[in-house]
Length: 126
Image 1: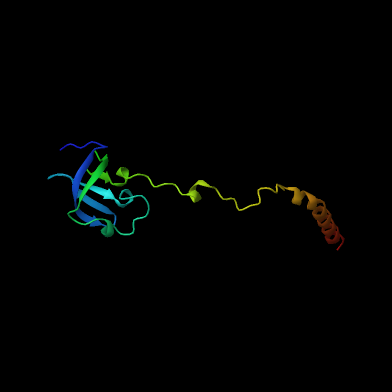
Image 2: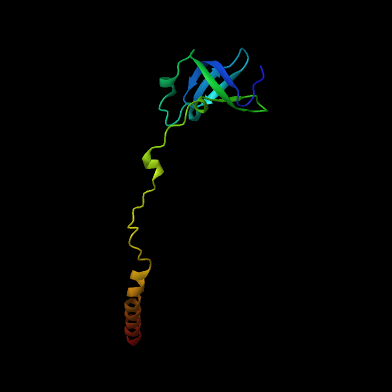
């Protein structure tokens, strides 16, 4: 059967590897769901999520035109997780109300220059 990118297909899990899950699409073709496409978020172990013989609905993500390998996704069929508040807000670890800029450096600059000149004069006299 000819598949196209975006097709939703039902297949059976035929193998589970640490990097992904193999799904039999029809009698002749098999595809791979990469671990990053199994679900939103972190996946600790694919064996906990899938069993051999399990039926799945998957989306065709890509078909390699040279090798004919089919990349599949379960994640594309799932709703995106809600954004939590800590992802929305940017945290600044500074005092944003106190805008000093280079003022502390400018106030000390004259003292540093006079100290340096004094040290140069001392070294020159020795």
